[in-house]
Length: 397
Image (cartoon, rainbow, N blue to C red; front, side, top):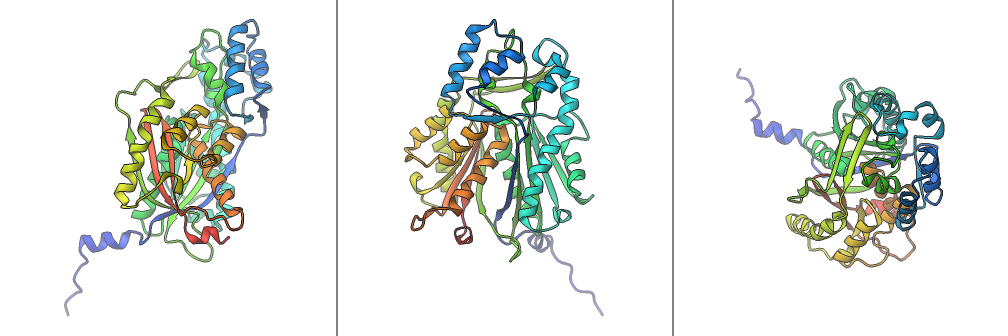
């Protein structure tokens, strides 16, 4: 009696793939307990760094804070930590070891707080997560934050972990695109994306530092976001919030030096060119045209919902102007910027969370757009673009 013919490689591959698109199944966010209003920050910063004699720089920070569109930010670093680590205020002193010690514990713990919320909303056991993607600029040690997070959450020893480091503000977008690929190419996969940032790694006084430090002191905050991604949702437990229809990454040529980060003995220094808002404004529409063209979907920008990384108020203003967006189209991004500041790669997850909240509580009779866009920007200059589709079930709950 002959044996059955072996399956072909093509048949095996088709069986390994999911049937439907990857979708966001749950979102969780978390922040450290310490918060500060933007109005208070200049006085606080110059006092704790013993820099009150630098009146011109303080006046500059005060002006930037007032124009930032930010009301408050959260931060892990507090006066108790600064008192125990006075070297943190002087970038010329070798404080990196102490910063890494603190971040190695705090970054995955903050991520665990966000991920626990996402897992609870998801409704399935943490051991059923098959893949983990962790993004941060605050890590400099191995085993890294992904390994620690897996332990904190009780993930399976067979979970497949990927660590993304120093992607900066596009880290959230990059992580979500990788999660989409994993979910769609591995039937039954459930991918946990975790982004966690604490600005401790880049905190130091203004004297003798990079001029961009003042801008960073006005913009950046701490937070963690977690998203569970999977295809072919299992009802009734799993409910898709946003389906991921298309994703791409674009690098703007000749912009290697316009956003950069470097870790040295005194922490992390970064450079943010004042050309960034204009550079993004000149390139985002091409990314959108290419994305919707690849799908064969005709889109008017004002007929979409928007989840834009709020790198700063000027970036949102430029994108809004270039695309001719109506007032309120970027409301979710502006709200997150106002309440949390720029939390680097984590921020776009907060925007997705705010967007789904607004859609779920929309006014009766107001139709929510079916299609939308998520975009994130960072060093490179890199633009992450993802076309999202909101299934009807989101609007029914």
